[in-house]
Length: 114
Image 1 (tube, rainbow, N blue to C red):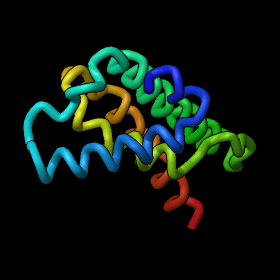
Image 2: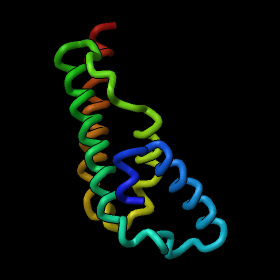
Image 3: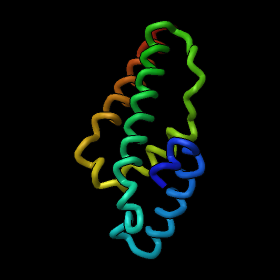
């Protein structure tokens, strides 16, 4: 699964969301059973996705227009939905904090333009 996340993130993230939903119903603990060999690759993808969104939002903030259309909202939503299920990421919430700060900055600029 870790190798596929770079090739087909939408499919992998959708499968992970389904997996976590089933695990939540059946077994609230040990949610990553069967994924352990791929956890680090998946965590790296999550962090890269969040970083690319921070860069995208920073670009919009500086230039007041979105020029990069390579970002995918559904991938961001899935990453944010899966993020809490990964214990390795609990200690490093800085990518999410950076994303929130970038969104806040963008909202401040848009409020000033209104």
